[in-house]
Structures are given as C-alpha cells and as structure tokens.
Image 1 (cartoon, rainbow, N blue to C red):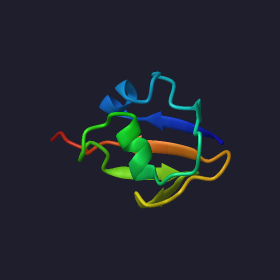
Image 2: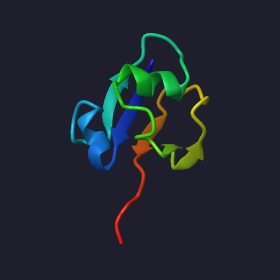
Image 3: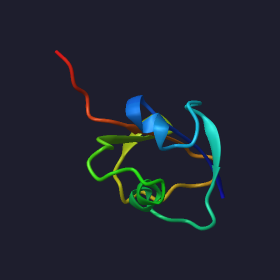
Image 4: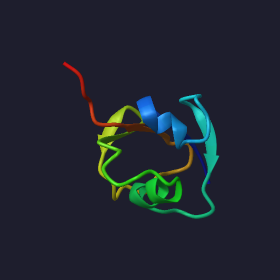
Length: 77
C-alpha cells in the first residue's frame, strides 16, 4: 500500500527525505504508532499526526493514498 509521508522540523530526519510529500510503501496495514516505531522515531518526538489535513490518533490505520504528516512538539518563546 502506498501512502505519502512527511515530517516537520527534526522529524524530517526520520522520514527518509526532506521532501514533506514523498511516497512511502507499506508492506501491510498497520497503525501509525507502528510506522513511527519502524522509522526509528523516539517516543514522544511526534506530538500530532495529520492525515489528509485532519488530526488522527496514533491507532489510526492508514488507507491507500493517505497523506500523513508527523508534527513535533512546538517550542520557542
């Protein structure tokens, strides 16, 4: 199954490319939390997940063609 995958900020380092919309192939359906683990993203580094511009929880199982973005915790002041 093919999805679009991207990350913002430091999470770009884990998604395989700085392109926020690159194709990612899943060998089988699995929840977003497993995709995060497979990518080697440390726990707590993903604050929000956007799927097709709608916030989803980490148990969401992507569908063919979904556009998924990982958003890190926001900091600054």
